Each structure stands twice: as structure tokens, then as C-alpha cells.
Image (tube, rainbow, N blue to C red; front, top):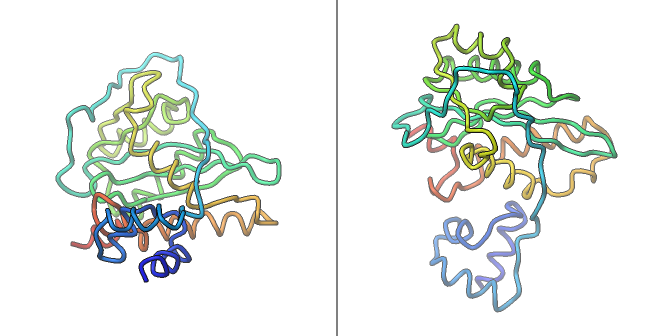
Length: 228
């Protein structure tokens, strides 16, 4: 019976491992893991790679403000990053901003290039969607994020800019983790014939992440947690 229930959940949530399955089915995670091993059940979707930004060589004043910082409410800390999506032999880029307290994706934008304009548009979308700016905006030292158009805009809103140390991707681990899981769960994006279908699938996957997919730390979807 549990095997059947697991297979049914995997239809809607094809990347759920035993922890999320246990939360969804409201059963012990060890029992779920045991049944998955017995029947050789594995999540239908898993593993990908993603684009990493190039660190700026220009001097700047920003440091990592997230060390030891734990947000106590929404919009205290936003983290952002870029990833590539290879579709039909061409590269597209996805910029996202995640609120670290709620784990909700507050903004996402796709583009043909990974320049500062894509990042700037994503920041603007996040501020408009949230109705406010964050206290701290964190990213790596990629040239896209360190562009003057982006830093000037954030500082004009009174935002403190935080950056990871060079060659320290783990200091933006929330976004690293998000993109890893996002691509795992989205599956082979080359299954879509047109760019329109691809873009629709990407935004649908982000909606799924925010509103339907259980976050293991929150034990509920981010958008649900944000309403508590």
C-alpha cells in the first residue's frame, strides 16, 4: 500500500526523496526509505549542472554580511544567483532571488544573456512584487551583480549589499542548493520544442516550488509558510 502511495505522489512530485514523501504521506521517513529500498523506487528526476558567474576584477567595498546572520522575518535577507539552461543547443539564463526566511522565490527572470540588465530587471521585479526592498541583498562577486546599475539601485533603496568571498560558492549556499534542486526537478528541458514552451515550463516549476513543493526545513511550501 505504501509503495502504491509513493508512486502516486511521484506523479505530481517527481523529485521527492524519502523525507518529503514522509511529510506528504504523514508516515515515518525510515519506513518510507525502507519501502523505497525494497522495491527499488527512486525519484524519477535527478541531477544537473549550472552556470556560475565570473567574479569581478574591479575593486569594491562590499563584504559578506551573512556570516552568522539568521533572518527572523521575511525581507531581511534576499540571496540571488544566475544559472544557465541549455535548450536545443542554445543557452538561456535564469536569474532568481530567494527570501531566506521564507525560502520563497520572490523574483525570477529569463534572458538570452547573463549581463547586468537581467539581474537589474530581476531585482526590480522582486522589489515590486514584495512591495519593499530587503535589508540585505546577497550574491557572489559576479560582474553581473557588481555592475554599477545594480549596486546604485540597491543602495538608493537603502539596501545593504553583501557578497560572498571570491571562490567561496558555499557562502551563497541557499541559491546553490535552489538551482541544483530546481534543475533536478524540472527534468530534461530539451523535451520542449519551442522556447515559449521552455519559458512556460520554467515559470511553472518556480510556481510549483513556491506553492506546492514541500520544503523539508519548513515542512510546507514556502508560500504557505510566508502566510503564517
